[in-house]
Amino acid sequence: MLENNLLKDKYPILMEGVHCTAITLDTRFDERKKFIRLHNVEYEYYMHLYRHSTSLFKKMYYWWESHLLKQYEQQLVKKGITFWSVTQKDAQVYKNEFKCDSIQYLPLFLPSWKIECKAGMGSFCLYHGKLSVDENEYAATWLIEKIFSKLEIPLVIAGMSPSSSLQNLAKENAQICIIANPSEKEMQDLIEKAQVHVLPSFNNTGIKIKLLNALYNGRHCLVNDQAIEGTGLEILCHVVNSANAFRERVAQLYYQPFSGQEVKARKNILTKLYDNEANAKQIVKWIWQI
Image (tube, rainbow, N blue to C red; front, side, top):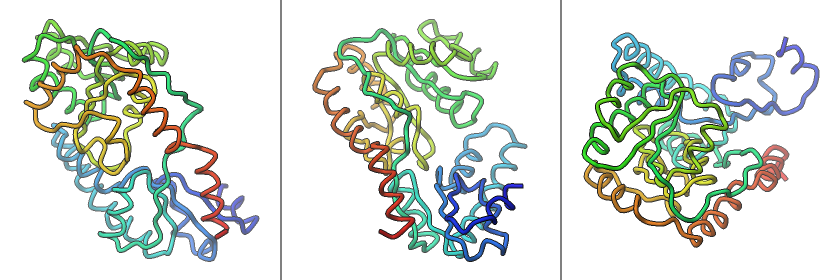
């Protein structure tokens, strides 16, 4: 049992995500130093899923989970646990809503990625993500109906398990195609060849790995405020919010070469923000109060 192994010593305990925090309810661990790496503000995440789901059953489930998670996250704060958030915005929510004074911002630890984005021109726009997630299907549907059905610019939507309704909607537009369940190699090839990454989000908690992937490996990134709030990545993206603004900016960026200066800007910012060694040293300082 994991609990028994943890009880063999007195070392600090690091938990990855709220879903891994059951031991905080166990009184045997009351005196241990405990740290939770938050993936997002969970109750907010589930509330966004509730708002964007089209299934009545799912909406009921997401709403109830959001209600329970808000109570649970507040309970964790009262236990005096230390938290590390992936965005400044999430840290602020914990401070303001839960009155948590033991939360710090800690950027994600990424694989050994290098800035591979290439200057020049791509040949299509791209939205990618796990399409079975309600929020991602909502975003893809919004892009089709509000943006690309009104433009003569190609859009590729790629990701796992797209619904039949999303696929049928895409088929109504000759310039839009869906690539279902691409391999990792195929997905990275699409990211590299795209001209514009259109990545609106309707959930402003946590950080979007697909956006980081696009910034490391792709060209222009077009997002809304909710996609980048509290991430520090605003300067590397084109940020608009309304459907009209998205259409106008897509039409502009599709014919605008991605410059070497933009590649340099990404290297300067991303390599400093996502420095795994520096961030690991920061963790050591926080744990041992050095």
